[in-house]
Length: 124
Image 1: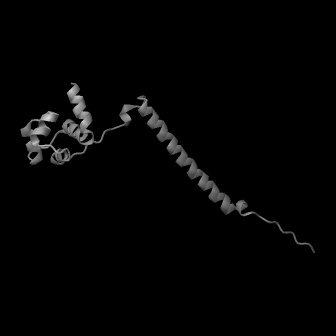
Image 2 (image 1 turned 180 degrees about the vertical axis):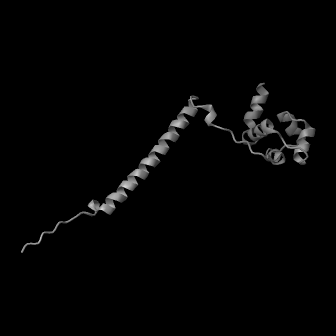
Image 3 (image 1 turned 180 degrees about the horizontal axis):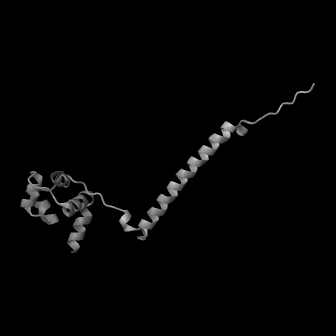
């Protein structure tokens, strides 16, 4: 009587093959997502991207007083340097008024890069 034994590698089992297929599919999805992101970034940098796909987030609430404090400026200095009325600035800081959309965007830029804003305003 002869007994036949077949050795099967773990890599050949159906469970292993199924898991490997699932892993390859996930790797493939991740790689595709990264590829699309890089293509989008390149198109945006080259200014060939569809501008309607990109939006700008401008926060609803801007803490004008905190921005001014970070810049270590008085109300008079801040208003004069960035072209605001001192009364408007005071109203914002006291919560009697809130900056509108374009002004919020301008304040956000002042907060993030005040030197660039000051340089641009000096050149004007």
